[in-house]
Image (cartoon, rainbow, N blue to C red; front, side):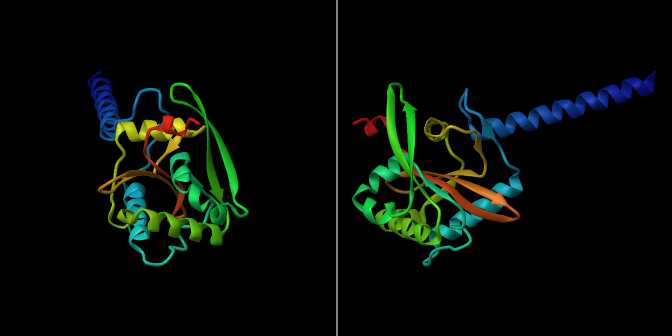
Length: 196
Protein backbone atom coordinates (compact mmCIF):
# COMPACT_ATOMS: atom_id res chain seq x y z
CA UNK A 1 0.00 0.00 0.00
CA UNK A 2 2.83 2.40 0.90
CA UNK A 3 4.52 1.58 -2.42
CA UNK A 4 1.35 2.47 -4.36
CA UNK A 5 0.95 5.78 -2.49
CA UNK A 6 4.63 6.64 -3.04
CA UNK A 7 4.39 5.81 -6.76
CA UNK A 8 1.18 7.83 -7.11
CA UNK A 9 2.81 10.79 -5.37
CA UNK A 10 5.84 10.61 -7.72
CA UNK A 11 3.58 10.48 -10.79
CA UNK A 12 1.54 13.45 -9.57
CA UNK A 13 4.74 15.39 -8.79
CA UNK A 14 6.10 14.66 -12.28
CA UNK A 15 2.79 15.71 -13.87
CA UNK A 16 2.78 18.93 -11.86
CA UNK A 17 6.38 19.73 -12.83
CA UNK A 18 5.69 19.03 -16.53
CA UNK A 19 2.55 21.18 -16.40
CA UNK A 20 4.48 23.98 -14.70
CA UNK A 21 7.27 23.85 -17.29
CA UNK A 22 4.73 23.91 -20.12
CA UNK A 23 2.96 26.88 -18.56
CA UNK A 24 6.26 28.73 -18.08
CA UNK A 25 7.15 28.18 -21.75
CA UNK A 26 3.80 29.54 -22.91
CA UNK A 27 3.88 32.48 -20.51
CA UNK A 28 7.45 33.37 -21.47
CA UNK A 29 6.49 33.51 -25.13
CA UNK A 30 3.13 35.23 -24.52
CA UNK A 31 1.27 33.36 -27.27
CA UNK A 32 -2.13 34.96 -27.99
CA UNK A 33 -5.26 32.85 -27.62
CA UNK A 34 -6.25 31.07 -30.83
CA UNK A 35 -2.72 31.00 -32.30
CA UNK A 36 -1.29 27.57 -33.07
CA UNK A 37 2.30 27.87 -31.85
CA UNK A 38 4.82 25.02 -31.65
CA UNK A 39 7.83 25.74 -29.44
CA UNK A 40 11.30 24.31 -30.05
CA UNK A 41 13.79 23.28 -27.40
CA UNK A 42 15.85 25.90 -25.62
CA UNK A 43 18.97 24.48 -27.29
CA UNK A 44 17.54 24.78 -30.82
CA UNK A 45 16.30 28.32 -30.18
CA UNK A 46 19.70 29.34 -28.78
CA UNK A 47 21.56 27.96 -31.82
CA UNK A 48 19.08 29.55 -34.23
CA UNK A 49 19.36 32.93 -32.47
CA UNK A 50 23.15 32.87 -32.81
CA UNK A 51 22.85 31.96 -36.51
CA UNK A 52 20.41 34.83 -37.12
CA UNK A 53 22.62 37.34 -35.30
CA UNK A 54 25.65 36.20 -37.31
CA UNK A 55 23.74 36.44 -40.59
CA UNK A 56 22.60 39.98 -39.78
CA UNK A 57 26.10 41.16 -38.92
CA UNK A 58 27.83 39.33 -41.79
CA UNK A 59 29.20 41.71 -44.42
CA UNK A 60 28.81 39.03 -47.10
CA UNK A 61 25.70 37.10 -48.03
CA UNK A 62 25.43 34.26 -45.47
CA UNK A 63 25.33 31.28 -47.86
CA UNK A 64 24.31 28.57 -45.37
CA UNK A 65 21.67 30.78 -43.75
CA UNK A 66 20.18 31.60 -47.18
CA UNK A 67 19.98 28.13 -48.66
CA UNK A 68 16.29 27.18 -48.83
CA UNK A 69 13.13 28.82 -50.15
CA UNK A 70 12.61 32.20 -48.46
CA UNK A 71 9.26 33.95 -48.18
CA UNK A 72 9.05 37.73 -47.96
CA UNK A 73 5.94 38.75 -46.02
CA UNK A 74 3.41 41.28 -47.35
CA UNK A 75 4.51 44.40 -45.46
CA UNK A 76 8.19 43.95 -46.31
CA UNK A 77 7.32 43.12 -49.92
CA UNK A 78 5.23 46.30 -50.09
CA UNK A 79 8.25 48.23 -48.72
CA UNK A 80 10.42 46.87 -51.50
CA UNK A 81 7.98 47.70 -54.32
CA UNK A 82 10.37 50.19 -55.95
CA UNK A 83 12.76 47.28 -56.45
CA UNK A 84 10.16 44.72 -57.52
CA UNK A 85 11.69 44.55 -60.99
CA UNK A 86 15.06 43.24 -59.84
CA UNK A 87 13.57 40.99 -57.14
CA UNK A 88 10.63 39.66 -59.15
CA UNK A 89 12.70 38.02 -61.87
CA UNK A 90 11.83 34.32 -61.73
CA UNK A 91 10.56 34.61 -58.15
CA UNK A 92 7.19 33.27 -57.04
CA UNK A 93 4.27 35.59 -56.19
CA UNK A 94 2.53 34.58 -52.96
CA UNK A 95 -1.06 35.84 -52.70
CA UNK A 96 -2.51 36.06 -49.20
CA UNK A 97 -6.07 36.66 -48.05
CA UNK A 98 -5.90 38.45 -44.72
CA UNK A 99 -8.71 39.30 -42.29
CA UNK A 100 -7.67 42.44 -40.44
CA UNK A 101 -10.67 42.48 -39.60
CA UNK A 102 -11.98 43.16 -43.12
CA UNK A 103 -10.66 40.93 -45.92
CA UNK A 104 -7.49 42.24 -47.58
CA UNK A 105 -5.71 40.63 -50.50
CA UNK A 106 -1.96 41.05 -50.12
CA UNK A 107 1.09 39.86 -51.98
CA UNK A 108 4.37 38.49 -50.71
CA UNK A 109 7.17 36.79 -52.60
CA UNK A 110 8.99 33.47 -52.61
CA UNK A 111 12.67 33.21 -53.54
CA UNK A 112 14.12 29.87 -54.62
CA UNK A 113 17.63 30.41 -55.98
CA UNK A 114 20.92 31.57 -54.50
CA UNK A 115 20.93 34.61 -56.78
CA UNK A 116 17.44 35.62 -55.59
CA UNK A 117 18.32 35.03 -51.92
CA UNK A 118 21.46 37.14 -52.23
CA UNK A 119 19.65 40.02 -54.00
CA UNK A 120 16.81 39.96 -51.48
CA UNK A 121 19.13 39.88 -48.45
CA UNK A 122 21.33 42.69 -49.79
CA UNK A 123 18.32 44.87 -50.62
CA UNK A 124 16.70 44.38 -47.19
CA UNK A 125 19.91 45.20 -45.31
CA UNK A 126 20.56 48.24 -47.51
CA UNK A 127 17.03 49.54 -47.00
CA UNK A 128 17.07 48.79 -43.25
CA UNK A 129 20.71 49.13 -42.10
CA UNK A 130 19.51 49.07 -38.47
CA UNK A 131 18.90 45.33 -38.90
CA UNK A 132 22.66 44.74 -38.75
CA UNK A 133 22.63 45.89 -35.12
CA UNK A 134 19.09 44.77 -34.36
CA UNK A 135 18.26 43.04 -31.09
CA UNK A 136 17.09 39.46 -31.69
CA UNK A 137 14.57 38.50 -29.01
CA UNK A 138 11.45 36.45 -28.34
CA UNK A 139 8.43 37.86 -30.13
CA UNK A 140 5.76 39.72 -28.16
CA UNK A 141 2.08 38.80 -28.42
CA UNK A 142 1.29 41.51 -30.99
CA UNK A 143 4.19 40.36 -33.21
CA UNK A 144 3.07 36.73 -33.02
CA UNK A 145 -0.47 37.83 -33.85
CA UNK A 146 0.81 39.86 -36.83
CA UNK A 147 2.65 36.85 -38.28
CA UNK A 148 -0.28 34.53 -37.56
CA UNK A 149 -2.56 36.83 -39.60
CA UNK A 150 -0.34 36.44 -42.68
CA UNK A 151 0.17 32.66 -42.79
CA UNK A 152 -2.05 29.62 -43.44
CA UNK A 153 0.02 27.24 -41.26
CA UNK A 154 1.11 26.81 -37.63
CA UNK A 155 3.91 28.96 -36.26
CA UNK A 156 6.89 26.75 -35.48
CA UNK A 157 9.97 27.91 -33.64
CA UNK A 158 12.65 29.05 -34.10
CA UNK A 159 10.72 32.31 -34.40
CA UNK A 160 12.13 35.69 -33.36
CA UNK A 161 11.53 39.40 -33.45
CA UNK A 162 14.37 41.67 -34.54
CA UNK A 163 14.06 45.08 -32.96
CA UNK A 164 15.80 48.09 -34.51
CA UNK A 165 15.59 51.74 -33.39
CA UNK A 166 12.79 52.36 -35.92
CA UNK A 167 11.17 49.00 -36.76
CA UNK A 168 10.46 45.47 -35.63
CA UNK A 169 10.80 42.50 -37.98
CA UNK A 170 9.70 38.90 -37.52
CA UNK A 171 11.89 36.05 -38.69
CA UNK A 172 10.75 32.45 -38.88
CA UNK A 173 13.68 30.07 -39.24
CA UNK A 174 14.10 26.39 -39.98
CA UNK A 175 16.46 24.24 -37.97
CA UNK A 176 17.38 20.93 -39.58
CA UNK A 177 20.48 18.78 -39.12
CA UNK A 178 22.10 21.41 -36.91
CA UNK A 179 21.73 24.04 -39.66
CA UNK A 180 19.62 27.19 -39.39
CA UNK A 181 18.06 28.72 -42.51
CA UNK A 182 15.78 31.69 -43.08
CA UNK A 183 12.22 30.70 -43.95
CA UNK A 184 10.17 33.93 -43.61
CA UNK A 185 10.96 37.60 -43.04
CA UNK A 186 8.56 40.51 -42.65
CA UNK A 187 8.36 43.94 -41.06
CA UNK A 188 5.67 44.35 -38.40
CA UNK A 189 3.14 47.05 -39.24
CA UNK A 190 -0.61 47.60 -39.56
CA UNK A 191 -1.79 45.09 -42.18
CA UNK A 192 -4.74 47.38 -42.99
CA UNK A 193 -2.25 49.63 -44.80
CA UNK A 194 -2.14 47.00 -47.54
CA UNK A 195 -5.78 47.65 -48.41
CA UNK A 196 -5.96 49.34 -51.80
